[in-house]
Length: 240
Image (cartoon, rainbow, N blue to C red; front, side, top):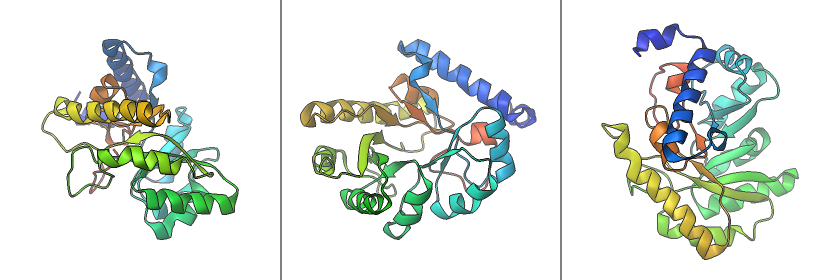
């Protein structure tokens, strides 16, 4: 389908197309489509676009930046679950805890400890995914794979966060299938870490607009499509 055809569709039609592609990927992998949650990424898109997504049945929205989400959320329909999928600076933890119901990119134990402390003050428990830099790229956030078991053990003593899974962003590759080894590494790391630490990690947050089908085939439970649902935007990269 051309970009012109996609642009002419309603959000509901684009969402249905993504769901169909998820279902086909699940069939290839012997999985149930219900195992995969679609988290539309609304980065740079305004409240009116988010409202169209909600009208189409979307209940969760992913955002990359705390400040953008804080400005946007009051103008959007109520009842949305906001997920933070981008890098979180320590000085933004407090407003992030106030707004978001899940954080997908906790990239260090120190950040996890800070989130835990703020959640304790707020009387809130925050589900989080540890972001892992499976590719080893210097330009990407995320802890090295070898640090994950230790981080899981240390995070087990934190009372106000719940580490529910792992997240990654693979290198940009010419073909979506070229991202497969990175998604597979995250799944294998999750399985090894669970066996070593006894910490069950049901969530694998991986896959964006161009490669989510490959991610689903490799075990993704949360995919983060943006462009394929909301259309193009300026300066994109990260969680879409």
